Length: 53
Image (tube, rainbow, N blue to C red):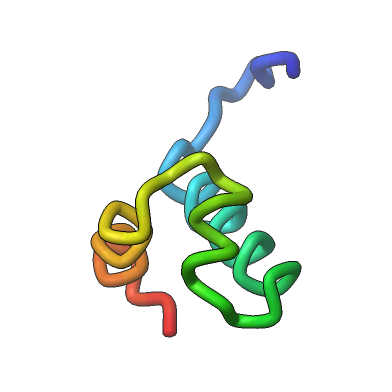
């Protein structure tokens, strides 16, 4: 991964990764958390933080 010259919006990147993991897991939060290497509670916190349903 290369950092773009204009910088990187970490929040947007994290939100996109979470959304992709949820899609790949068919909406299963436990499986999405596993894909991301997070605990289910951490994923739930971030879902709320980024207002992802």
